[in-house]
Image (cartoon, rainbow, N blue to C red):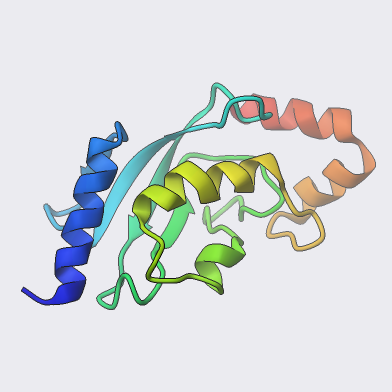
Length: 143
């Protein structure tokens, strides 16, 4: 067994043991769904999202692909595809990170601190900047 596949197995087990509901696709370890709860003290608290994760062959040296399956209203999530604009995954990924980091740190921070100046959902970004109360109501509708 090669080192990346051992790491993939170890990271998957660590994620499953961290009380996340993980559902594999085709009984493999390269594609799976994770049930993700909105972080406490955020607009997303109380929401539950299904996240699709795909691990490339070169994982952990290459970042996982992460996307929302369940609809979410967020300036940095493409509403149609569920793709996320998250620098730590898309540009600054390091093999020091693991899947638990994605779900316990990166995604909660992503939801707590949206970046409307780099949007994938232009409508959400514009609404967040010009009418915060209406934006917050729209977020809650998706939760």
